[in-house]
Length: 228
Image (cartoon, rainbow, N blue to C red; front, side, top):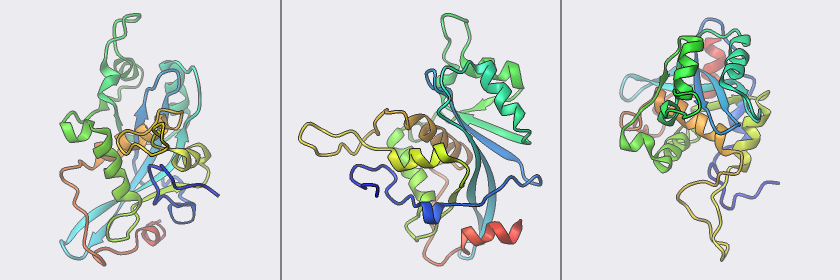
């Protein structure tokens, strides 16, 4: 039993958002990354699209196929080696603009070091909405379970760390026990949650994504199997 009190993603369901979503070699892989402080987090996703019957457009559905989480004291070079060892066809890396902040000890930011080692630029959205944690959390919620009841965010069951973090991600409590619904607590789960947020905000901009009306698209979960 997991209490929903103060839970950031209360609509996240192991039964409905977790399943068998393996790597499809025909599709590119997108990375969401949080360089963190001694505890980087990386999520690997593939995206499929389902037809919107109302607007005649395609809506993105995210499938997290792999993770690097809860690995501590990893240097960027070590993180890069782990990422490369996965053998995925990486299309784009999305992360925090703070990754470009110059570290005094080395004279460059972690994102620059990452680029030097991989050739992949870490893409960052810098507008106010994208950089807002509250707006980003709301954006992620719209994929986990939208207002129309559709789910457009799924995780492969092998991603134990990420699933655990979704379950434990909480808002801090005030002394009187009432939750603060503003910024989630930094308690260890935040690194992977930030990586997911960077991924979704980076791939599908907040201002461009609109929630769809009820019955506007086909079942996202079954779409994975129809296209596999």
